[in-house]
Amino acid sequence: MESSDRDKPTVELLIEAIKVLVCILQDKNEYTVGHSRRVAEYAVSIAERLSLPQKEIENIRLAALLHDIGIIGIREGILGKPGKLSAEEYDHVKTHPLVAERILKPIPELRDVVAYIKHKNEAYDGGGYPDGLKGEEIPLGARIIAVAEAFDAMTSERPYRRACKPEEAMAELERKAGYQFDPKIVEIFRQIRGVPQARLVVGPLSLDCRTFEVTVESKTVLLTPVEFDLLHYLMSHAGEVISVERLLQEVWGYPPGTGSPDLVRVHIRNLRRKIEPSPSNPIYIQNVPHHGYIIRPPSEE
Image (cartoon, rainbow, N blue to C red):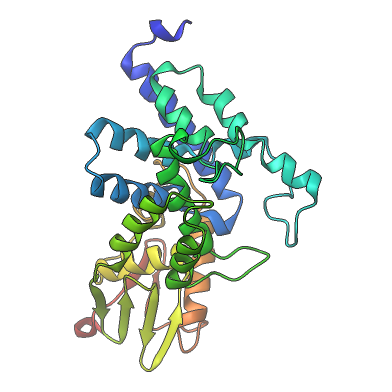
């Protein structure tokens, strides 16, 4: 079928199918759960601050959601390797934007989206890949996604390093502004991150929405973005029993019927290790057998 013969619902179904595939790919690595959704949120906040047209903002959002599709072409064992990549392995990883281009290019409605994904790994000084573009030769959407993706990657744990604090990640973006990243985009993101954000409090739990830190009694711990998203949702719905399916869909963006319940259990367990006095006997995040999880407000305890 020629792409021009496809009707709009067919194109939308194709895009939804690709989104599911991206979720499945992220499913294979507990460190990247929800990564595309967070990158999309950061990218859209930058695009909105730039007052871009709504159509361009939507293209940037979609590109951010699909930006990892090219990792389907990366060999097993490389992305989660707990050490430095060899030169050959790194060259192999650098092919992922071109894999993404091959997957998405047959859909002409995604022309701008494809360009943003293909060029998100270019560097502002011309030292990136795949085409060595520099400065404003790099599509604006790609420059925005580059900053958003780098921030989420640095603040997330990986097998080979700990997660950075948000302020550490922001400092690294500023250090590389003008070299790897567009300095104007970095400055806009700095302004967005600098805006005071609400602290969410439920009983003894106090969650700082800017630093990803939670204070329990007198103990303060840093959460990964995955853990932060999970705790923020449970605290925002304190008193409600939240099903595993709802957590997969509303916290990490999995389409209905996709996503592994094991992912939720893994990250609930990790979260409990950080905030519970006794993770094996949790008092903050409680199981409701066959229904889900709940954080009870003090009045219900």
